[in-house]
Image (cartoon, rainbow, N blue to C red; front, side, top):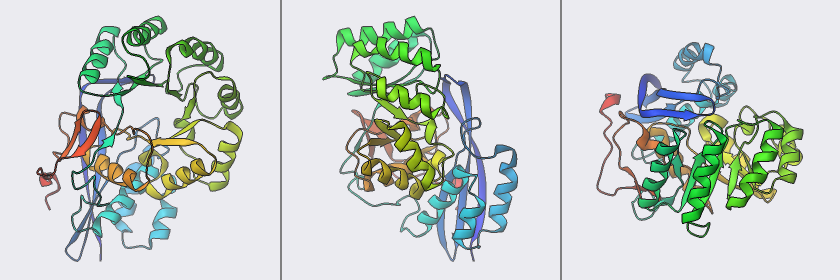
Length: 348
C-alpha cells in the first residue's frame, strides 16, 4: 500500500524576478513523498498561478484527493488530474522515483555520474537597464556562450540599447542571443519590433504575442525575420489532435518544452515527437522549480537526445533551495560526483 505525504515549501527569490507578467518574490511548491514497502519516491508539484493550467482555486482539494486516492489505478489518477498538469507531473515524478535505487537518481547516465554536463543558456532577468547589463557581463564572464534575455517589461529603447551594446562587443559566433517576450506585445507591435531586432543576429524569440491567437501567430511566424518559438502557446493543450492542429496552423521554428506546465514527461515527449516529425527544433526549459524538479527534468532531458542548449539553469535563483549536487559551470549544468543530496526537509 502506498502512503502519500505532502510537504509545502516556499522558495524565496534572491531578488525580485521580473517578467512581463510582473515581479515575483517567492515561489510556492509542494513535495509529494510516496512511501511503499520501504521504498521512497519524491516528486515536486510547482504550479505558477496565472500561467499554469492548474485550477489553483481547487488546488488544496485536489492535493487531498490525491492523498486519499494514491492507491488508485494510475490511469484513473491521470484522468482525475487532467486539469492539474503540475500536480500530475509531481505524481509522475514520484512514481518514477520510487522505482529507482536512489530517489533522486531517476535516469542514470553520463550526466548523473558527473562525467558530462548539459549545455544551457544563461538567463538575463528584466530589471533596470544597468542591472541587466551587469547580469550580461557576469554570465559572459562565467563562460556562457548563449544568453536568454527577457524583453517586453522595461522601456523598449533601453532593451534595444542593451542588445545593441552586446552586439558591438560580441557577434553571434561568440554569443547566441535568445529573447523571451512572454506574450508582451500586440501583433502590430511584434511585427515592428521583430523587424527592428533583426539587425542584431537574434537566435530566436519566444512567444512575441499572447497565446490563443493562432492565426496571428501563424502570420508572424511566416513573416518574421527572426525564428519564432512557442512557449505559453502549448500550455493547456492536452489532446493529441489539437497539438497536431496547432503545429500545422502556426508552423513555428521551435517549441519550448516545460514538463511542469505541460503535464509531465510523457506529455512532453508527445510534443517532442510531434516537433521531430514536423522538422521543428525544440529545447526544454525549467519552470522555476526547486532543485528537486530541476534534477528530474535535467536527467530526463538527456534521454531525449537534445541537439541544442537547454533552459535549465534556474536552481540558483532561490535563497532556500534544497541543497543538491547540481551545479552550473562554464555554461553547463552538472552533477558534482562527490556531493550528495540533503533530504532532511523530507524527514525520511
